[in-house]
Image 1 (cartoon, rainbow, N blue to C red):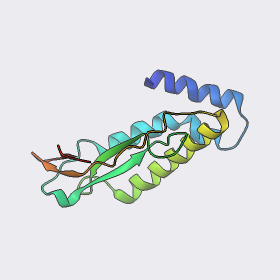
Image 2 (tube, rainbow, N blue to C red):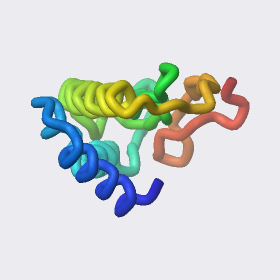
Image 3 (cartoon, rainbow, N blue to C red):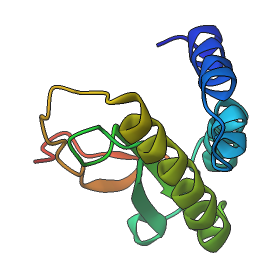
Image 4 (tube, helix red, strand yellow):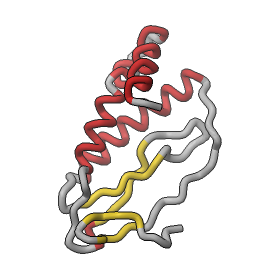
Amino acid sequence: MTSKALTLASVAGVILGCGGKQRVTEREPNLREAIVAQVGKAPCSSSSVCRTIGLGVKPCGGPQQYLIYSTAATDSVRLAREVARYNEAEANRNRQGGLVSDCRALVKPQVSCISGQCAATAGAR
């Protein structure tokens, strides 16, 4: 879904719903952008600083995607807090909208430092 479509969907959710949690959903696209910006290019000097975090929630459970980040460049506590807030808003939207998904589980990628950037390893399972 494009950013514009996601924004329109969030605004529609605010217009149709009256729950207090809708306000978080209204800002969801901005929060997602802030999370992605916070992760940035994930610079590293060793694989020990490379991590993953699940972003988004599929209606049947599990993350929509995994972000790869560097603890050397990202505040892990802040990132986890913002991802949890984003994921909670998305889970609420899924429940309230009765949404469904393909229910395929994503495999958490193995990561390492490749050419100064945290990345999924080629043989990740």
